[in-house]
Each structure stands twice: as structure tokens, then as C-alpha cells.
Image (tube, rainbow, N blue to C red; front, side):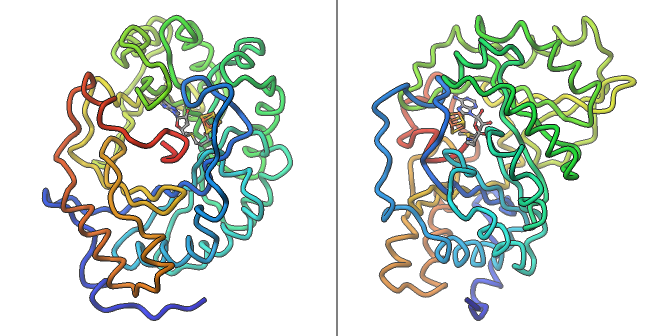
Length: 337
Ligand code: SAM
Ligand code: SF4
């Protein structure tokens, strides 16, 4: 489908009231998942949205084109698990030809990579984050509620072979659950061209988060410095992660301190949920629904107005962590991180 650019949209990049241009769009392409990670969703009783409520590929492509015309240059596909969406390669290929879109990333649990990493690469995927919270098989199975560690590790090797370098690995660090594996993960980053990103555990609707579960990034850094010399890497002002080189290592480590070290200053992120809702902050209540307007025949300018309205309501930074739980009305599954 070819959509003529709308001059009004081209002329107004997505800038919020604090002057932050928004160049990065995270698109949740499904709320479904083949894992059941405890920090993300309950073991049973998850009610998936009917397929008719989820954006189809034409709608995703149309909306991504709209966002790109407003200045977005990077898209991340997420979910749920994006790789369970049938025809994913086709979607990647459709996005890969959009002029002005420079990067297409995906965050995945890695369960399909052993079979599909090459196909994703050929379709035009430029980068990969693989979630992996334990290197111990039994513990992995407890966290993800699926005994899939060998498959995920094989997938990571296949992805490296397919040219996804540096590959990023996301580790949600939870006190009393996996914080004793930080050094093992750092070893992986030292031995392989991988950036291991340690993420603070965040509260979301229904994930049972308690303050004592948080393992702050400052402590993570202390733990790693017991064995490794870490040198800060230069990072873009929009980066959520603070990266560090490991002396003599092939990869690096990074810390996403969503709870203890605000990185809102340089925020350039917009989110599109699987049901077509635009969110200007992970922790802000949902804003306008683009899907309903799109299905009602809205033109690009009307859709752009919904995005601009959402951006106009964006806050300078999210409130202290004690208040975050109360502000989130979507589950992690729907938003996609
Ligand atoms: N299924 C894919 C995966 O697991 O990578 C993509 C969706 S998942 C919701 C996106 C990212 O959010 C993952 O890296 C996951 O570890 C992270 N995440 C989920 N719940 C979280 C929480 N409560 N706190 C911090 N990160 C979380
Ligand atoms: Fe699924 Fe990813 Fe959530 Fe785990 S973190 S349950 S893999 S969506």
C-alpha cells in the first residue's frame, strides 16, 4: 500500500512540551506469548484479546509510515512474544522498505531464533534483544515456567552467526531470585560479542512486585566490580541503559535503572500497544486509540492529531517508584516493555 505523505505531518515532528523529539517507536505486535515469566504475567488465566482487536499488518504498516513521516527513525517490535505472530518475516519485510526508517529491532524471548534468526535477518531486521534471566536450567524453567534454556542458548548462537552483533541480552534482576548470577552473565559478555543489559525489576499490573524484590543498579555495578574493571561507554542522550566496557572483553554490560536512576530527561520513545493505543510513557495511562480511528476511515492528519495530543500530555518524568503501580493500566504484555 502506498500512502501519499501528508505535508502537515511531515512539517511537525513528534515533539513533546519539553522539547524532546520522539524518534523511537516501540510496537507491540501481539499480547500472546509462549512463555509465562512470573514478573510479566500470571501462570494461568491470562485472557488474550480477540484477534480482531489486534492491529493487522496493513494497519501496523500504515501507522509506522505515519510515525516515520513525523520523525521516527527506529522501530522495535515487541509483545507479548513478537515471534509467535504468524508471518512475522513478512511484517519485517514490509517495514524494511519504508523510506526514512533506519533501524528495525526486536525484543524476543529467543525461542524461535534457532530456526528463524537467518530469516529475520534476510527480511531486514537490524537488531535483536533476547530476554534471558538465568543461565541455570532449573531456575530458567521456574522463572519462564517453560524448560527452554537449551533452545534459547542455541538461538543466541544462531543469531550471532546470522550477523546480529552486538547481540543484546536483557536480564531482569530480582533480589533473591537471580542476583547471584550477575558475574556469570558478565562472563558471557566478556567471552562473546554480546551486551548484557541488567534491568531493574519494575511493578506492573498483576506481577506481584514488592519493594524488597528490587535489586538496585548501583548494587549490581558494585557486584560486577568485584571481578571486572568497568569503563563507561559513550552513550547517546536518549539511551535508557548506561553501558560499560569490560576490560579485555568482547562484549559489554549495561544497566537499565528504571526504578532508581531516572533517564526521563532524554526520552525519545513512543509506544503503540497491540490494540493500537498510543502511549507516550510506559507509566502513563493509555491515550488515544489509533486503531478505532483508522478503522473508522480517519486520514493521516486525524491520526497525527491523536499522537500529538498524547505527546502534549507527556510528563517531564515519571513519579517516584512508590506511585508507579497506581499509574499503569496496561499489563506488560500489552505494552511490550
Ligand atoms: N517476549 C519478549 C521478551 O520477553 O523479550 C518481548 C516482550 S517483554 C514484555 C519485553 C521486555 O520487558 C523483556 O526484556 C522483559 O524481560 C522485560 N520485562 C517484562 N516485565 C518486566 C518487569 N516487570 N520489569 C522489568 N522488565 C520487564
Ligand atoms: Fe512472554 Fe516476554 Fe512476558 Fe516472558 S517477558 S512472559 S517471554 S512477553
